[in-house]
Length: 190
Image 1 (tube, one colour):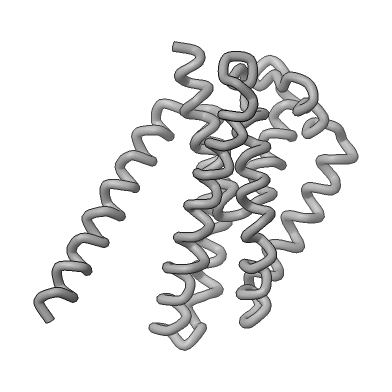
Image 2 (image 1 turned 90 degrees about the vertical axis):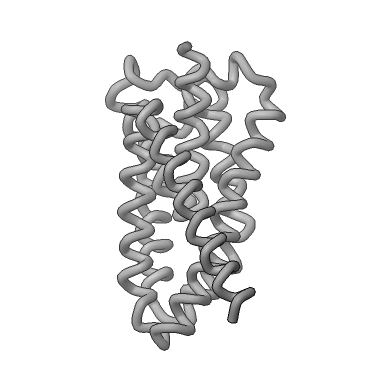
């Protein structure tokens, strides 16, 4: 059961990295640094909890948040993050507590890469262009703020409540599938 909870936690953290690469890394680092009994990172992932790395991650969170709020810059940021977010998802998946010892590191890295990459592609290639086109760019700021909040909440919940997080992720994917199916059906009947 403990391994299953670790896998749920890892999937939630890597999905969060698809929205903002540095928030889940910072959350994992802060929790591992200040609450080592709650989240024990194995080597080499324990470097995430190093105070200097936490400061660097904090700066990177601020830079990404600001870049994502400025029109036109947010699209450049998404292009750059196409490489960063999947890599961050791979790292945070592999670094999650007890996963790396029970799952081969390459499988953990691949899972994190695919999950974060999938969320990033959905965000930058589907959601953001639709928001930009339908609101003439005015909706990007509130959507960006919502993404940062969701990434933070998902990261914390993935560590604190992995079973609830897994259920919420399944529900989210079901709702997204239903929404996508209804839009596809409407497009076919039009």
